[in-house]
Image (tube, rainbow, N blue to C red; front, side, top):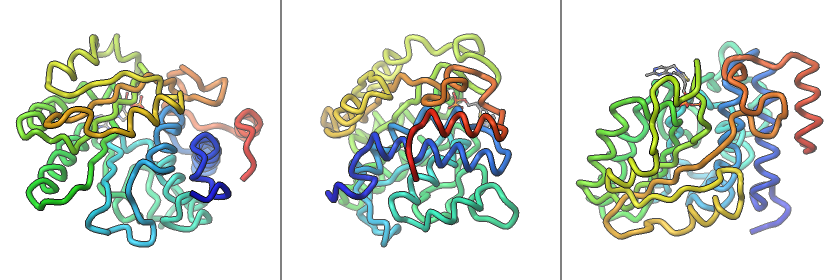
Length: 275
Ligand SMILES: Cc1ncc(C[n+]2csc(CCOP(=O)(O)OP(=O)(O)O)c2C)c(N)n1
């Protein structure tokens, strides 16, 4: 890899997409910045080298598929796609504005976005279909689905998990962004999921728990897929909602709040990355 490209260094790429997401959400006066920041490190690894994708040919049939099932974190996905060269970074300025394709929830009108998401609970079922299609077509692409932990309250997630094991979809990886908060409260209080990793194991997934902000652990967890022949993989990534901006970290309010001008300045200062 060329070390001068931002995607060659996942920690640098993560910082850049955090900053871009904060700026986008600020200028659009939009929500979900906490949800964006918790997955920035994971996205930086996926698009920094893990995924087999070609930005010049986003519909390449043998590409790995990625679905951001928690589609409300669209800003940070658009940021990483732009950094990776799927479309010009200047387009990010239109996020959340009138007449843009960069809608507040993921839309497949954007180059590199596989599936429009935002209604929670749909990404894993769709990912199962893609993974099954790969098997039936004799193709070796993998399918990665990033879900929220609150999203795991949706029954469709667990129906899809049953399906994945039954069909031995070892080309499927479910990554759960386990930031312990959802929109209106703590996951444990709204509808608890513990023991979460044990549940995925019980559903037949080869399951690993990681620190979702530790670059070594993220890289290792994504490097060897499948972990076990015949079994889908689950990566339970322990994360912090709002990670990287002190006053947003672990704060429920930043699910919906948008930073004002002085909060934007403080966030940019803390992220310590020039664009
Ligand atoms: C089917 C459905 N129900 C409700 C919502 C509203 N909603 C948007 S984000 C959110 C919380 C999601 O929490 P989590 O999956 O933990 O993601 P996080 O924001 O913490 O990353 C909810 C309930 C939705 N988008 N879709």
